[in-house]
Length: 609
Image 1: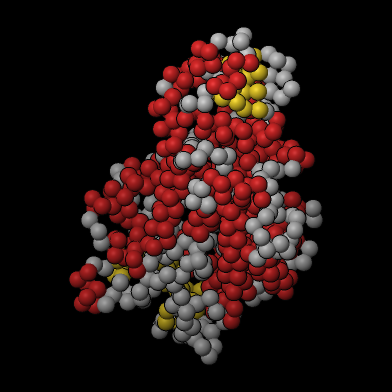
Image 2 (image 1 turned 45 degrees about the vertical axis):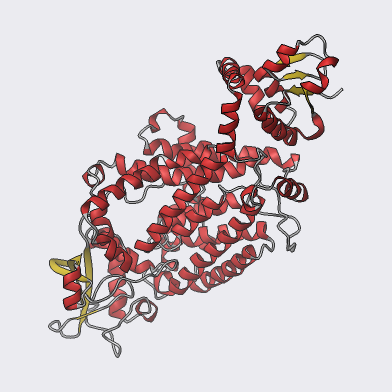
């Protein structure tokens, strides 16, 4: 006979959880309230039925309490790990039975808590709608990232660009040898030409649109990951930001989330999302947020420790917005309070991701609101959009279906929520490998790397070039000043004319603008170059040489060219310290910035020198 779980039909707490277990175990287990069947089991007293659930197993043995629950759940293959832990992990059996007795003695209170944490219906969470939305968003983000880079690629790594791809691949092959592809993974390894890069970008745009329309999504995501990895590898001076590697890590996981069947279906029916794959996305979002908070504390930067960092941030970030200018004017107490809130969101809220659904929704809302505030005050290209997309996977189908029980059950039935058994081992293996590798950067950030097995650390280092698992931690040290490099050219060495960039500060009356989700890669790198000498940024000297040559692709990256007829004979760079103006100064002068000259950055250079 089938196993039979007998419960208290008058207990609202029991009814909620039994409904959930019935859906999980399907038709493998029968469920009956003791009020209907207790007379059929005279060997079990009525008081025993009232105290705890009773499982009459297929071998007619009787089990009670937490053991009965775990034995019931093991009839679903996805829950067998719970029974294994109950049976074999020291202390789990005793703790589970104690917790069960505590709940049984306070059923009404725990029933209220269940509704508060999970909602009216305690149904298994599925993520079909969220997965569909997430994949479309990811396709759009890939489109933004690739199209944005494509428009800048000739000037950055093209034949006449700052760091030509041909020279980069030749230098790498000379260092690593002809078999160095594993350490420098790029499809351009065999065809390092600007024309081939244009082909990669074009295919990437088509693949992005395919994912957005959910056409051949699985195959398209494989192609997109390979293309973006190829571009990132040969352009690390310009595509080496944390959102670039975040996109690669997210894109790799998405391959296992995307549909591989019915590629032209217009319905929401897709390959069911494996719970372990969903968990990997939650774990990625957790690491992104938590590691950023830890990095700030672990850096020892006094600006973070004294809660003064945001008094500098809006002014010194790479590309501020005009809203950032206004927020910078707010009083110090507001900035200090904002740091406290930020640490709460980065260090506490991430743990809510793994809690019951309503707490998880709160985590999604908090992180999403945080990302929107960042978007309003600074230009971080597609980074915030990608973080928002990850938040979508914290929302289950029941929320979209307005929590209506019958609609939820029908939707789950229509969309076949069970992952095929043959696919489960592969998804579980992927989860174990990715999770284990991700512990390396996390433990390093926590200064606990010495406790990890050396083989695991070596495996992480081996796959490092493929950007499958990465470390995160933005603004670990807050910049308290804003040095800006002003590049000037001259024909005679006496009269100097500045090159104006499209987005970074230059002219004092230039209003900070919104440029996201596009990322002007050169403008961003100029911010980093200003923080240290030009010798630490070899690309900068190459950039200045291209200006002396009058390279059209490079000049296209700039707003103005003060030498339209012929390139200058000389180029130099000077550094200034920029500050936001205040309300009074801007009213009087229309200036958003004020500056003081700080000295020479690059001495005068010439092609004839």
